[in-house]
Image (tube, rainbow, N blue to C red; front, side, top):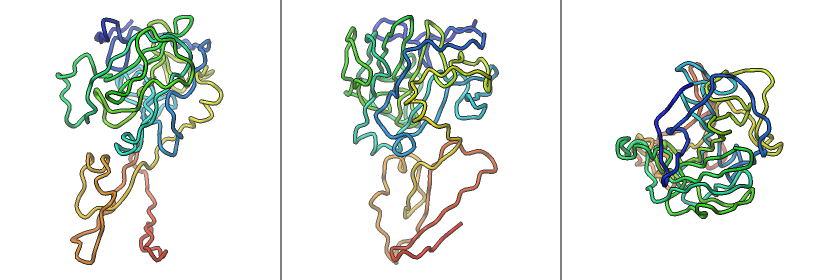
Length: 288
């Protein structure tokens, strides 16, 4: 058995990515869940993307269920991210993946960036603003990093599948705006794509997905992809890019430089990117 540090949420044990995890090393699968719908109201592959999966590697090198690196060591949930902070500010709902009863709620943490937040200042609250829902037969789901002031439920509320819980945010220890969705059976964190226990084994046969048929169809595995791209008149920083700082940048013949930038996820050594830049006239001016 393996024990992680305890995270308390309004006096309750909050089991999540940076919290208390107790799990068996057995690669057993579980297929008797509700099943679970998408925990976010967005279009996967258009305005939201799965960037991190549950870590299914037993060793220190994180591996997702396809044995690739879209995860990190000890990651216990599925991270569904938005493109950038302007998308977050427009408001994207986090929704209940199945009917149940709200066990606990945490609210009041600011939406920050991982570049500015200090770990010791939010020790025990890495999950940020969050909701925990208990379902039948010992199942529970966790919804982390929600937007400050957006949580729409309270402890002991009975919620229905698809009910709004709040909005996607960037509270706690979060690198980008997303919802960290976590499934647990008792005290065991499970990968909803395979039903396998955390850090058991990747690429195992006979997966037992916990997603509904509709949710699984909406979640094709994408190894790497483009997120946002644009132009700037100086070298941009990652926080500026994610905050939409260059959305209205205008260029003239006197502009010192024109820099094309892009943010992608899941890149690995040897990847190649094809870029096509079209002038206002419709003529292709750069193709690579």
